[in-house]
Length: 114
Length: 113
Image (tube, rainbow over the protein chains, first blue to last red):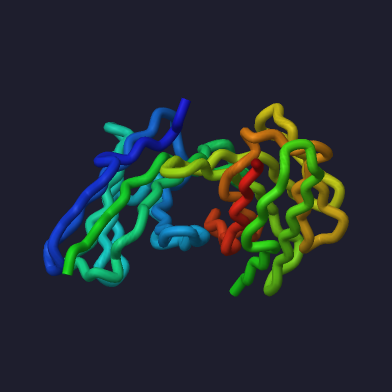
């Protein structure tokens, strides 16, 4: 079954508003990552949060991780039309050594209206 | 930083024809390499990964195969395409023993008719 599940599947907001996307997972993780994909393009890494971290910031992005609830959230503040994209969470297993495989969720499609 | 190249960008092939998609990596050595498939509006399905030359692990039984003839080259192949092979194919690279970030290529859109 899917390790990461994003919620909501789609989100439409106005420019300047904040966007919050959630991700839930099932098994123990080493870290959780968020990626962005513009339509028809490859994925771009946004931010990584380790299992021993609770919150992380990068520019307008804020990620939280609650390992007790097996969930993460991505907040984009002061959204812009250029933030329109699909956002995916991906989990790296807590298996030690190099984490070869990431498991991706189905993504949240964010539309920011000008 | 790494740069991932994929070609072709778009491909339309008839059912039963062969397939060869190529991925090359610049800016790193001895990366872990991955092939993903993404169906329309869906997440990524890991197809194959490789931790070194000639070392291929398959994640799901399918009509496809992968090869890694050189350290920074990863090829996805099929002898006979099926309609269900249509999708968006993404190659990704990861540097071992560093944060597990994956770098993605621009993708190949494959349509099987």
